[in-house]
Length: 97
Image (cartoon, rainbow, N blue to C red; front, side, top):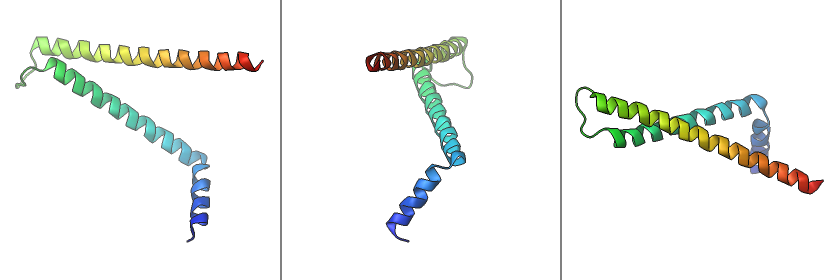
């Protein structure tokens, strides 16, 4: 198989809507897993002094608060990025008028 036909097949595969959807879904799964890993690592370091057979109430409360703040912060950043993107697109549209 020559390189040009392989590139053509790759281009056809990328333009396949089902394949694109599959790639998007898998990418979202990967991002979610990375986010969960980050949250777990951050909260573990913050809340676990010395692991034992059970969580004490202080550690449990710390984990709950840590996860809630992590989610709040992630949501805030996402909203902020969306606002920035919208304002940039509105600005560029006003320049083109």
